[in-house]
Length: 453
Image 1 (tube, rainbow, N blue to C red):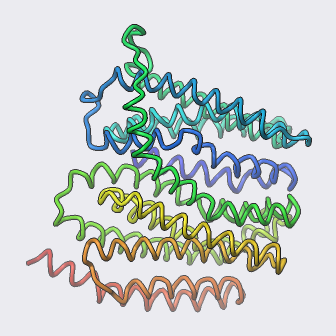
Image 2 (cartoon, one colour):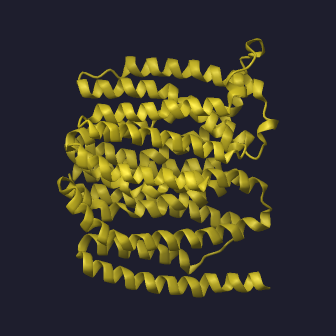
Image 3 (spheres, one colour):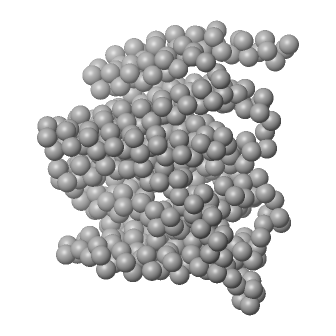
């Protein structure tokens, strides 16, 4: 599973740096606009899939109620078709490019959500190999099509969108193959399953609202940028966000797998596992930040037309740190403790704060820099709030290491944005050396002593 996830991450990274080189800023920006709205398509299953994931987390695949899932799968197909039609009717666009994006989004509503129902079943039942293969198939098909279009020298926003859709369709077919006893069953055993569906929606809608609010934390700020500045600036900022989130996809996939494992874990092991994973994750990500200073210089040479994107990248890269903590640690642990409402309240609260920031920074002050840095602040606030709740639940108590991590982020932002590459690199490297020394003294050595005892 890890190998497939690593390959998928590298494919995503490769395409992230490749696409801006072979598309003009307008085409890339329209592609980013499609992906921006694409992130909200999960809203249309109303938490149905999340409820299935929560209900069957920790089950074996053979223990599933296949008849119930078979009925729910086809009912969801019909429901998603109705949602797609409503989107086309109520959100019709006059602009041709935006209308084309809308049509493609409507197609993907049906493909994406029904595919994710099968993927969530595989995740919940620990069929990790199959789950990883589906995601890998998605990315490799997309990569091959993109390379083919680049060779033909006809890459534009339409080619990017169609490639994404085809990748989803092929991987969807693979998901159907792995779950064929759910998708294909005796039609005479079909039932409406309204009670089961409502139970799953009631259970999963909190997670869905949390996920939508989580996306909107960044999305509202991006919306403000798209409305207040040009589509080209929106595309440049979106590239910075995409680069900042490269590692997050890999970590999120691991986090989805961790949840069923936590359900089986003894309570006394939860605290130890959390603190150990936190140390490893933070040390690794803060170490990766060291390479930004060299990476920025390379990117300027590679895609000089995206200089604005590279300028703001230092302000947005800390998203990787906070989002990785949320995906790998905070969200799986809070779900395991059945704190879905808490996750929702935190995400909605931070989303409302994002609305305030966007209104002030984007529309009132008309300040692009403040609009960009507010994205990192919002993601940081959400992570800190979630971690505070977990500290209370797991009775970890206050520890200086939490403040040190945030201090390292502040040092990184200042050095990357305000200093040159060499000076900023030296200051951050010294700071990281001090940080890692404190971590080993305060955390690693006590853990080793505990293990010995």
